[in-house]
Image 1 (tube, rainbow, N blue to C red):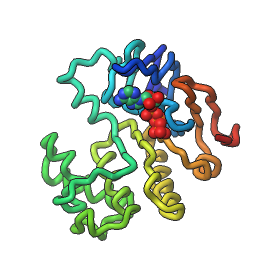
Image 2: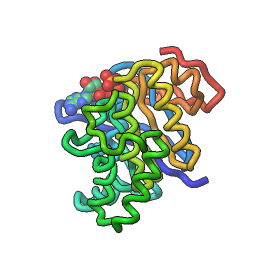
Image 3: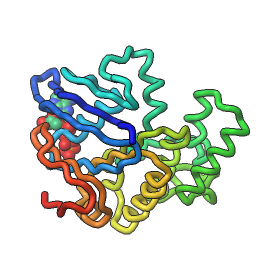
Length: 231
Ligand SMILES: Nc1ncnc2c1ncn2[C@@H]1O[C@H](COP(=O)(O)OP(=O)(O)OP(=O)(O)O)[C@@H](O)[C@H]1O
């Protein structure tokens, strides 16, 4: 299997001198599901922001599908972002657009053919179980439904990698399990998933590879079926 993400000796210092990542080496294969765990301030969000080039490493190389994104020019960043879907804790939907429009938006900006857009949007809404809500606005949806829309939007242009930063952080346990089912369906289609989480129950019950960060370093890297997660 090919590598979806490779980090080589990645360091990140913030302008105030805080060293958030200290020499990360890592490789993630295409199709893997990886949890990123660790205490507050461990560097999880920094790690995730590096993958979609919201932040540049101070030192080191980051390969996404064999391309070093640390040396990408600014104008190439939008092309990288099309290869990576992103889901946040707080959904970040556009409030004045319907469910359908929120999801279609990502395809409209790349000028996909209208018939293609419709088919693809309906397919992903079906995948996340929200076809019946396509005309609703975000404020008419529950938190779990909003997160499903945000997940549908993140995968609508078939990125090989999906990144989720605390995707269940604002959801109750029952809804969180449903969101994990959606991620499973997406992972089963071959999409690599990187998910930062504090949710110990999920990490222990829905088993995948676990990367533990602490003080900006990888302090554990356990394969599926090979761990219990203690914080
Ligand atoms: N913009 C910034 N400027 C300076 N320091 C920062 C900045 N963002 C994060 N840090 C620091 O970098 C370190 C790692 O932070 P990061 O947000 O990556 O941790 P985290 O593991 O995601 O934490 P949490 O679980 O609380 O979200 C912390 O010491 C934090 O205070």
